[in-house]
Amino acid sequence: MAASRLSRGELINGWLFMAPAIVLVGIFLIFPILWSLWMSFQVGRGMNFTFGGFANIVRLTQDPVFQRALGNTILFFVVQVPIMLTLAALMAVALNDPSLRFRGLFRTAIFLPCVASLVAYSALFKSMFADAGLINNALLSLGLISEPIYWIRDPFWAKVLIITAITWRWTGYNMIFYLAALQNVDRSMYEAARIDGVPAWARFVYITIPMLKPVILFTSVTSTIGTLQLFDEVVNITEGGPADATLTLSLYIYNLTFRFMPNFGYAATVSYVIVVAVAILSLAQFYIARDRRKS
Image (cartoon, rainbow, N blue to C red):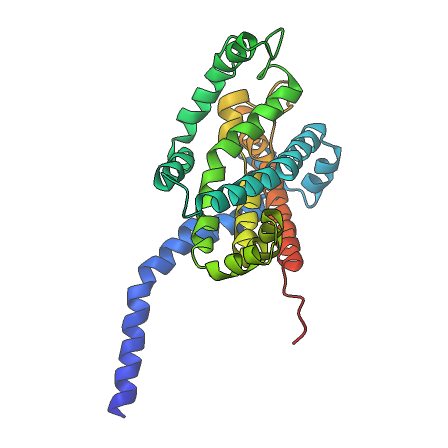
């Protein structure tokens, strides 16, 4: 009996210790999610809104700016994420070679961009890729181009600039995960394959990639989430231009909320497009990466 009363007391004490965290999570996480879901069914400007049912969803299908933002976001995801993860895996394999000198220096140099300030590095890229910036001057002096490339003012090159910027910043971040996973791979497998005459590319495809499968899944999901929420680089480098060529869903939500006449209901609806896209793509990646071996 005493033991049961003691267990009940411990249970009460446990809930009391957890209560402040639960309250804070409820106020700052659960409540905003429920509120935004409710707001996604509201129509109106500013704080004058009323229940509109599925009006905002219908508006999505008729909004060319939203469709352009969605297309740009998907383009960044489809092009940038595979390039970044491939580079991260190749760099991790190269830097995992015990015969490579100054490995620590190279690892630090590649990882450093991801700890740089988002605003600072975006401003640096905007300066470097200006019409008369460092990149154009270097390309002109090498004779690779005959006239400056309008990185920020041309729709195609603006997309290339954004992809370059986020790849530069986040490749090292993903490389660290691959490098940590490679530390746990038995090197005798590579030695045996090398003795059997297996070429380097085959060792990478048939040994390294399967061993990195869980980490690849993790980095692909996190990179998907980050790319679909892309905001900082776009707003600081191109401001979504030129002519909405680099406008993303997150920047469009910001514009709907703060730059244009506030439309909180429609902005909440657009934000749930990101939620649905992340859920679908993440589930698809988990499905593709599932273990197909029969028990």
